[in-house]
Length: 455
Image: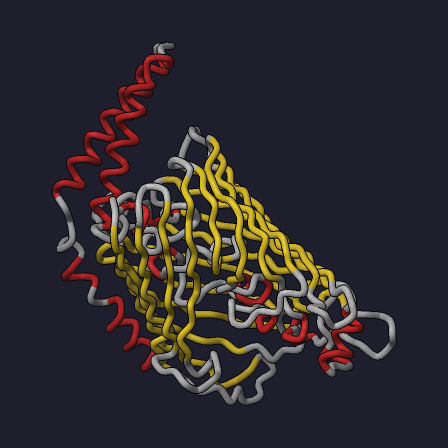
């Protein structure tokens, strides 16, 4: 326990002397102007002259954009970090869209320390080893040929080493690499290795823009982030709607297990292309709300996963997600569900029996709430938060032929309580405690400290 306290002090106690170091008088002045303009808008509405507020609203939008640009520095000159940059990408990943022509370089990184409890839920030894890891170091490189055509890519180095042939031990991966053919500022065609547009974090996973030291497990076990496939499709914006739709290579059922479907992803590496899939997403962000900002959306992925094995292996995944922000408050909720066909054939193909069966139905959901306690006093952020998630990768298993059963260890919940501190918007220090539980009572608690950045 003393070790955990010392780590928290080292990670977050540094905030004290720096709380005012990053204050920018330009931001304070622009925020003052925005407040005055909003007061004018409210006054006009109360007087029944709401039709005269169009120009004031335009000025507010311009000033708000300038505030976000100053907060982000050079990381994304025209993107808002909290809203995900441009065309479905994070602020650093979308830098290439802001350059006039030529090369764009960005990136992010994250470090993680994990301290595991010595005991499982049932009191038996956990056998876990505490770890410290450079989880990811990522470089974005892009090239804008002209106003109509650009190339964008992400190269990820995992766990500080390569050559082990094991994702958990370290590897270099191309996370995406695509060409965009743009039709104006609001629509385009994308082709190459693309991020599957599901959930919150498969596309927007730069560490300063999500709460917690680790991504929600629902978005790694049910939605297998980071998930990319080879394909092509369209993307765009229509009023308050943003949308993406691609035809891509599908999953390969030889990688499915009782725990998750992650090894079914091709990653663009000699992908089997006997079966293809359709994936899409739509998000609605109202142009005006009474208070705060709202995002509501849905996504899906559907296709066959047999990949020439002689059975269909139909696969359907969908999610519903929503986000609400108001002043210092930020909330998120997500529900995802998967159905897999021909599971008995998949089990036979993969040599799985009994409680090792792939789940025919899988689901997961989570909700989180954070509050920036420095929102009105500093350009820095200090966000305590809480997240609760539940997921089950074997909600249903095949009943025929007999002999298959669900492992209660795959019916899981996780409660996370933590804090994010951003001395500047591009850098974050995180600490949280996770309570892991499952129906087999083999869950383990852990304490984490993380450091992340984007540029």
